[in-house]
Amino acid sequence: MKLILSTSNLMTSGSSVVRQPATAKSNVELINSLRSNFQTAQHLSSTDQAATGGVPKAQQYRSWTQEDNNALYIPAVDFSQRGLAEERSQYDITVKLFYLPGIPASRRCAHTREAIDLVLKELHADSIDLLIVSFPGILFDAEDDSDDEVSSDNGSEEPDDFDSMIQTWRTLEGLQEKGLISQLGVAEFGSERLARFLLHTKVKPSVDQINLKDCCVVPKSLILYAKQENIQLLTHNDCMDILPIGTTRELLGPGEKGAGILASAPKAGDGIQGDVEPQWVVKYTAVVKDRGVVENKGYFALADVGSCVEERS
Image (cartoon, rainbow, N blue to C red; front, side, top):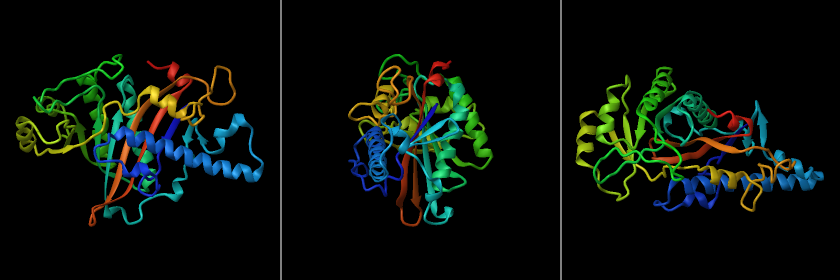
């Protein structure tokens, strides 16, 4: 079964997660906002249950989630009640899609479309202005502009290989041709990787988003090459492993900090049985152009649980 996790709009949630310090890593915001949205949905459900006599304990999570086509939305979503306040033309919509470590590149065509479709439904939009993709296992080193590839934090995953990145980019180019995306971007590419990458693309990236540990120093080689190729350099503070498996289990599990989605024990009837495996995370922002105000910001994430995980290739 697919588990679709959502934060809702962080700009209207009233939660403290909206006011994270600028230096806080993106996954702190993601995890806190997911947990906050789950707790809000659970609280509202508990209030309704108290008024109607409650539901069996084994079915409690179903009262605030929504199952549709073998996918469980956590919490339940009502896309008809969402969307942008003004005309689509008044916004710049930026989306960053994180492909997660250990997930086969062969899944990315479906994953990309799933993530984009959720964002478009959330915002009631027919296209996005910029899609930035983050490939797993790539680390940008601001000191020497090396194109180091590193394993994930648990040391068990190999970095993304170049051929799989090109294969994925073909999917993105196809979505741009269909008008769903205006511009494409990459993350953590140094000048050498960019130069090699551009040789294999029909649509070159308009943006290269890099994580600068020291905040201020961009390698001269990258500045010159990006200027030559008309690629805009942007910075970010996202962490590389944005949704680890252990964190996902804690979020969805039966513990004190968990949402009670996953069963507490084998053969227990209080949740879903099976191992959980996060597949991707997408972050989206909608900025009002003439005011520079972020009106809508949030995340979706997808995880597989049960037989889907066992069938992993």
